[in-house]
Length: 633
Ligand code: COA
Ligand code: HC5
Image 1 (cartoon, protein in one colour):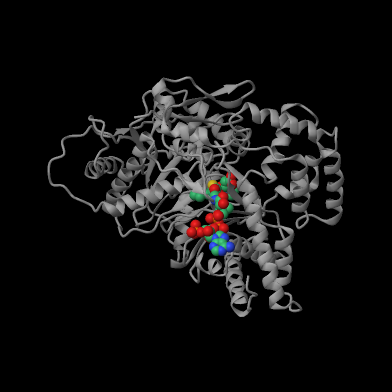
Image 2: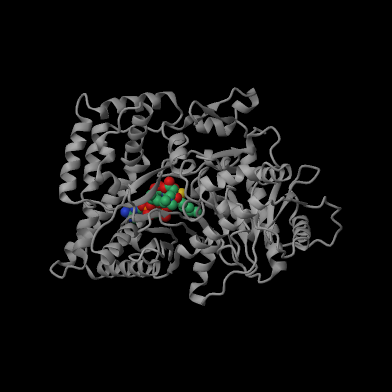
């Protein structure tokens, strides 16, 4: 078997981490995974002039005319021969020729590890699985055992490097992220965080962490023969854990991980001064993943039940519910309630959603494929799960109290609305020969425009995984063509045929921006690269980056992402600005799952209202298409 341990993360210079390919034994170098990785192209650096032109076009629908004119001047200065833009471009091209991916380390650092807001709501997404039919503790434990077995089955494919390579638009994708999600953890720092990945250590971990009633356990999930425990064995072990962790007035130590990162970084340094605490924390960090066996959730009306489950996956409902039943730094935490609900929360720095979703699709298939066999044969004795102890001194107690308070404020702040749009799915746009994703994005643009009578900077995630170690690029969904479409839609002076033709243009425009983004030819990561290159070269910050238009362009009042899955899952995340929305959607063939989030303290936003407006927009666009005869292509 090829070992997965193929590289080490090292820090170079002033905390600028980079991955170095470590000379390892010959058996490792020849791995099938590595040869696939090597065959992938490197992320290109787009041409400076192309990015400048596209940037100005992207500003048009979202800034005032005088701001646009000013930006045109600044951009002209920036890109002219001998201008600072050209110098930075050369620097960036040099960086690209010397690294595996000129962007990926910068991206992990700036988008995640240097970002100091709590990972909860502000960075870590949630995922909800289809509801299962168990309704009690017994069912919870049995389902948990099956879920663990399913994850271990997936892990075997990672360990053996037998994961099928994924494709997007006919191109093979980088598979690196699959090797980053298990046995890894984020570590809080005083000013910046880091990530550890124990899958690559010489003795990779064989245990998971289970948390129940705020109490943590280390559970070995491989037997002495090295084989994964069976579902029956896992169930027995989980029962031992539940029986030995009845509700108590123990401190919910996990709540510390919900804090602002600087605050948690300081508390962490203090927490691990104690040897027992350090060992317990290390066991969590080293574990393959965390399993949260949750307690009750707040009572809500039936129509809010799906939103309540999404909230459990996103933040756990607050300190009096399940927020302390987590370790939010852990890359993957599976969450199982007592009422048939389940899902996960994941720390975003090591990977994007799709590898996590592929894992979940596999787990659900595994659970469905393998009906429960309750063996009556003796199973042999297994070592007891190991309880992880924490010594709580007054200072740690104070940190926990503060974390509870800020988590509860954050829980009150989050406005989450889940909507299953069940009138149609990908089928309708496909029948109208339109890209379903572009169609949904145009409905989002229309919904927002109807609520606010203006367009806003809109982010949609595009995958850069066609390139080695690629992460994401931004699709700017608010464009000249989308603005023309939304402005015309409710205008009674416009004919339906004109509206349809504007929709078609906008959809085609969106699809072509998407193609540009996934090929590494869009503008946002390039502009970020030029900006970070200026920091690197210590040149004074070019005015294009201090310009009002640039801040407006990055103030994403709509932050959106399509995350498809084979199973009927729902994914969710928080807004990225105080007066904005997070919209995650999963288009199935005949329906679309949406999770819309906003912040309650912003009087202008309301998740239910936007969800309602999205539904109206989708229905109205479909009605328009059905009422309007279209010219044959
Ligand atoms: N007529 C008919 N069918 C069409 C069509 C048209 N004009 N255009 C597209 N389709 C079909 C496609 O062939 C595809 O078919 P499939 O369902 O059989 O696969 C389907 O419609 C979906 O295509 P489309 O809606 O255009 O979107 P996409 O699947 O290409 O996805 C992105 C677009 C941007 C979401 C994708 O490129 C991407 O980058 N995904 C990753 C996003 C990500 O990483 N998110 C998480 C970040 S953590
Ligand atoms: C389980 C689904 C997770 C989706 C998370 C996602 O889309 O994250 C985006 C990542 C990126 O780099 O585009 C960020 N976003 C949530 C702010 C859209």
